[in-house]
Length: 161
Image (cartoon, rainbow, N blue to C red; front, side):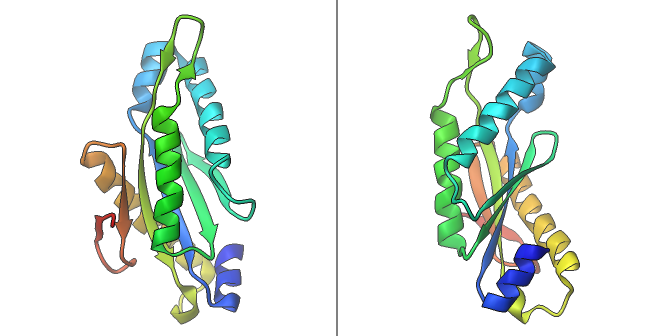
C-alpha cells in the first residue's frame, strides 16, 4: 500500500511481479523439506542480487514470491525478471554432496499506474497482485521457465514482449 501511495504522489509506474518456482513440490517430495528450505533460501539470495535497493522481494506463500519495482515500466520489469530467470536457470543448487539440482521459475508481471485509479490503495494491491498472479499461471501452464505480462487489470495477460 505504501508503494502505491508513493506512486500516486510521484505519478510513476509501479511493477508487480509474481514468481513461482516450477515443480517445487517435486523437490520437497524427492529430496525432503529441508532440501526445499535450502533451495528457498538460496533462491531468495540470488534474486536479491538482481534487484535494486528500493525494490521489494517478499515470500507470499509456499514457493510463490512478490517483487515490487518502483518507478518501473513493462520494459524495466521484464528486464529485471529476465535477469532473475536466467540467473536461476544457470545456477546449480547444492542440496548435499551427492545431490545437485537446477530450478526454473514462472513469472507474471503487471504495471500499476495508480494516479488515475479511484480505488483505495488496499483494493489496488489485491487487484494488481491478482493480475500478476494470473499472468504467472499462464506462464506455468505454457510449460514454465518463462515470463508473461498483463496489459492492465481489466485486460487478459498476454505474451511478454
